Length: 323
Ligand code: TYM
Image (cartoon, rainbow, N blue to C red; front, side):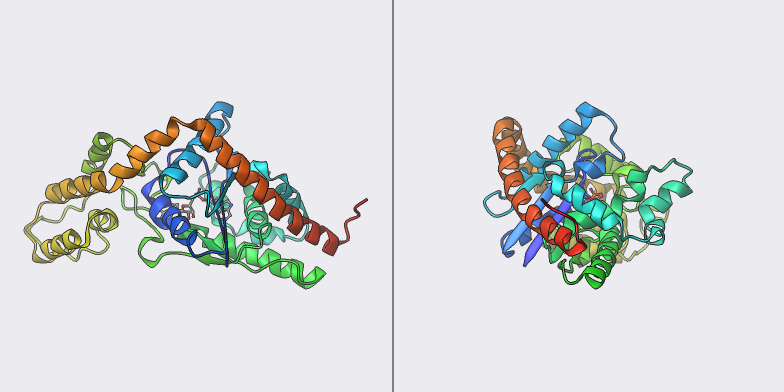
């Protein structure tokens, strides 16, 4: 099994990124034959238009992934733009991608609906993502639920290329976790940087506590019994608290007579314990940027070798001339 996934360096990673996707990266690196994980800086260019910031987010993203447990001896960690073969493959795929397929993609539709200007990069974003996946012959793509549509688009593109030019690409499958495919943010909507409702993984404990205390709760009287599942506080607590405490708090919800303030305090404390170790590890890695850059350079070399082989296969299939 070959695993691949990417994450955009658009700012600090949040709980949704971790529980939806990164936790899967870490788990799968132990069982995959090959695992490729990258910082999607080309995709991030569709939103981050500041040179220094993009550079910083890119390196920070790599540090974060390593601190969270990505092991460069088990997985190939690299930056997307270090593999130009993917951009070349993207063009090849673009020539067979129907406009209608891209017009249906939510990220593009959402932006248009909000009256924001969309550029060609945003419109063709899913084709670059398809190239990312196909360039490494990936079978499994661990993601959060919001990326499943893009993986379907990738399958469509690969299927029609294979149909037209003969078997060339491996058909990938998306993989989401049942319990954290769509982690809620502090307003109950999907946690997302663009909604400004995130809890960052590496925030200091004090700031995180403040944010947790600000989580919106419903206005029902606190002594009314309530089903815990679907309540933001409870759904977040389930991610970071030990099972015993989760069960206790579920019972409190069902019995009624609890205060949201107490649950928030429990959540803040559980979060602090949950992240303490990785925050320390991150501080250690941040002090060694040269080590992190070496990891990325070695990863890029391996990733390029793989992608170059697949690009050549696709170019030959499409009849592109090579001297
Ligand atoms: P991005 O950078 O928005 O998010 C990275 C990963 O985090 C997941 N995620 C969530 N999961 C659960 N609940 C949430 N609230 C939540 N928010 C984010 C995302 O689903 C994703 O898995 N287009 C991709 C990056 C990408 C990519 C790829 C992914 C580029 N090329 C190739 C897979 C394969 C993106 O914008 O993810």
